[in-house]
Image 1 (cartoon, rainbow, N blue to C red):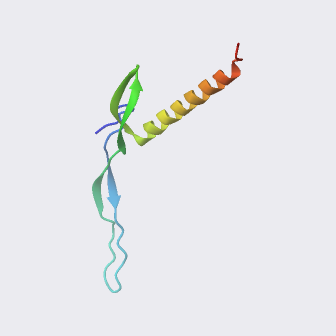
Image 2 (image 1 turned 180 degrees about the vertical axis):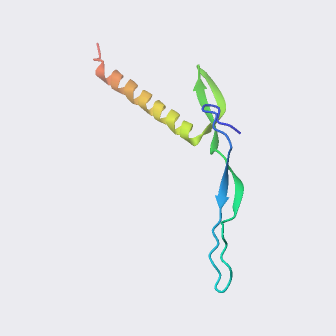
Image 3 (image 1 turned 180 degrees about the horizontal axis):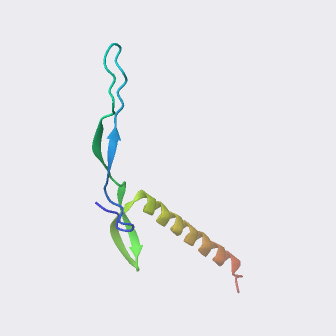
Length: 88
């Protein structure tokens, strides 16, 4: 379970739960800590790599970067085509 572009994978961390004090009872001296997993948000997408459509798993951060690059490429190609004068 890793992103095919940036190799982002599962990370381990800790989860803290804080217990409020109970009236008349003892306060917890320390919040209990449990281990947990942080999984990347992977999406299956088809992208063009070296002229070939491939199905890859991308994290949402990489997916956002690729969509932005495609938008900029389309925008620049439209601007270049409108800037060149038509010869009849």
